[in-house]
Image 1 (cartoon, one colour):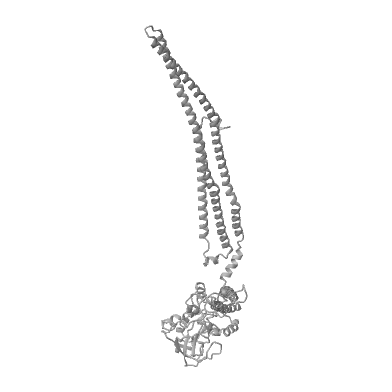
Image 2 (tube, one colour):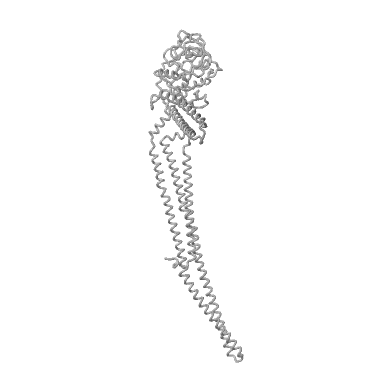
Length: 617
């Protein structure tokens, strides 16, 4: 089957068909180009989506991605980023291997098609020229034959006429001969042009046109093959990335299978474990026992109505403090008596005492109030160390529960050790450079490195001191914690330094803030004493608490327990800390002698202008 023989007379239709084939190829190129744009946009959207949900650096979200479920999600985001990369690969390969190649091929195809049809039209023009020459010679031959016939007829007429002279007859005879000669010449030309046209026509229809049409057919078949190859390449480019996309999906599945709820639960424990023990049972308060107090003293509303100082009930059980009740002053913890104050002497007249002797039982709060306070307590800024620095977080993280504080301190120690190692590496590098300068003075002055070396050594020393400080705090916390994974008995806070102007405000927060609170038991008194001895130096530099008023001793009190002070009836002393609801008031006799006395043994006169003093209505 050949277009040259089968379609020898379909030149115009073949021209239209080949142009349609080029249009189809350009349409396919446009399709692939739009597909590449879709792939790029899809990859871009996938990357933006992955980036949108990536955790921000140095933010709380990074800490959340410790959990296996969040890590699976993060792995999904990363795999989707790689997934998007494969779509970019598809776009790039389709652009380079299909779009660009086919666009170049289309230009070549157009040039080849133009050349073939130009040759075809040239052959057409040649045969048309031969045809025109043939037609012209034919018409001339026909005309000459007619002229010769007329000249012959005129000669015969003149020859038959007796009236015509012999000269006219001879003239007519010569004219007839000339016309016959012209007819013979025209006949010869016509015969020559006819033979030439037949030869040209044979060459045109059996040689030129079949060759041209054969080339056009081959061109068209190459175009069809090229489209088929491009379609196959289109599929292969997609298939090439399927294994990598499969690996991305396998990575997502692997991340999903790595989700460990038990591990996440353990991480929650590590993140929020306070180290406290649950509060102990609250003792029964027997109100049926006889109480030695007046009606006005028994009523909190009466004491408020009479303008007497309002006693703040601490709600402390004999067993231990609630975990969220704060004791933010270390010395108060170490020296405050661990037992209720004794009642005043029975011989005294309660009605004669302005602030009346109070029974320790009366300072207990109702259980419902205690529970509400436990459930609604919120952390407060209470650490004087952080207030002195102007920050919200203490340097030693004493505002955190013991377990969390230990983790933060350990993290800080690790960071400082890394910085120390970095500085030591820098020092070693400078030392080596100095040795090189000593061996080769032309490379540099060794003395120029002394200043830098001294600076690095000074930085190392500062970092070591800082690390030792945090290691001491860490050792203190780890020494206080019973064991890793067990509940701690007290919250760390021994390194909190407190400033004098804010001591009373912080003391008022100790009942409701969960930060820096302690649990106390009688069995831990020896431990508290040891800690007080070990860390006395921490508070040697603190200024003494300012006096917020004065008090007068109503009874003689023999301070026999640690943290108490003896007073004599009628003695006037300075008040440096009010009764916080535990029945004890902290007083000072002089700069070196201070302690606690039962609140019911003294009459307090607060200075309302003093900082930290409460104003009673």
